[in-house]
Length: 345
Ligand code: ZN
Image (tube, rainbow, N blue to C red; front, side, top):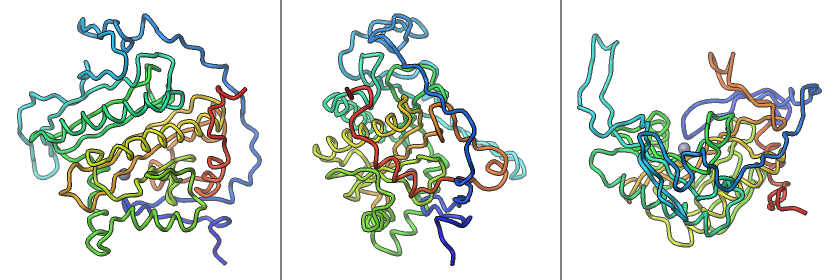
């Protein structure tokens, strides 16, 4: 009898159409690698060398204002530029290129250099959500912008060079790869079912419960059935809406709360400031009824503060693979305290 807990199998990601190989039998192997804890990360609330702290100088001689809440500026090393001439190259259908323009911004979450999402208070996190919505509305209203990606790279392991709490917003003139895949899948589902793909998926997950991590009145955090990363999390809105521009005040509060709770549970897992890439997938306004607002968390850690998963070998050449099942990962995250380990006496 085929058993998801025992036998190797592939799981399908309905958002992208891709598959992941799951090898649950391998988690029974004894682990003999390192499991050391990291020394506590002691950072000052203000770092005179940090280019994101209030009053400090950035590249090109820009001086940060003495900000007291969030602070947004155009990235000094933007990957996308507004003044990019249009155009395309196509040689024999093999050498194809298209001009891409856009805007890259940086959002500081707080003037405090030593905070993280997990350690921010709820009013502070709500101010971050409000700033995201404001930037999202402004950018997505522009005729030269087709998509706005808001994402946070947290921790050196994810290539984030500055620990000051911040995220990035990249707004582009075309739809990026992951968004194109999810757009097609969600449209196909909506056309057939008359409901969003994630509304149906969320109802199924809530009825099962085994992959739920935590929830509040407006959002649910779960380890998706098709997760690639060991402790991958998907945050889905209970109400189907396409973009953060249509969130109510209560939903903004609930988003702030669930993002803080997910980050807290992550930190509590190995008692370390947990590295991850997180970001939102969404479409603005009411013209995209098939789109269902959600956030993806892709954290690399596997067994401890230092042992990470690598996407190499078979995963680069064939199919991504995981050992620990999504159900086991969700069970661990669900069992962790909601209070941050640094705040426990
Ligand atoms: Zn997505």
